[in-house]
Image (spheres, rainbow, N blue to C red):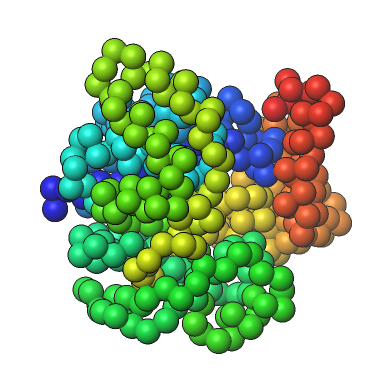
Length: 358
């Protein structure tokens, strides 16, 4: 359909993937899986469905030149730049007013540049089904069938089935649930009624703006000021004046937990959120000893490790379940079950004034 659009969120810095991911080279610009960057993978997944003219990228202003060079087929005018990070609600609202100007009847899919999707063909099929459902006025989210009781994701509880579209079941959403503890996560998975919240949404642009007006009226008012300036010579100035006033909030808490007529399509697409080194380990095929090697490595009695380096030889002896990442100016050695703590190290580097390593 001519009014179908995609918005790829590509603004984060990826602190949990330090020391490879840096402020000047964020994770969406890195080759973490194969020879394509995460952003390139995200654009590639859409190529048979949408023309590049209808693919938009939301990112930080300082990242736009880098990311634009990686996807030169995306028109420069399709990069929507935030002056500063205001959470997913602000970023999605900004994209919505840009699309509203382009096409008042636009149906937008919100996707992200840091997801890995193994079953790309199934993803394309379910996305087209979701567009169709959203065209009927529903707010759609793609739920991931949980493979284990994860505590790092939010969950979606489904209610009754309302439709089947192109072979995909569509259910009413009963609740969005914040990240649970291990016991609750196990209960969710055992019930069979919950999906992981992938953060992928599809809706009509007028509908999401209506939800902003109802549930985040302060942000909606500011977005309307931006919308009124689009196409004018002072549009960028208006955005810079307005943006610091936008409340920092997630789209889940700000809109989705309160919105009406939200539906979920549970799907198995081989999805992973590449948020840290442990997640990256999980999407690669390990050798017989359970190691994932990216670089020049020689190991003895090394099991269950992720080794990432360059030309420099990395030698490990008697190492198990450990992450080793070597860069030009920093080396990370971290237990795999402590991968989330890398973000804390980045915060300590910042506090200690070691910004040259960030």
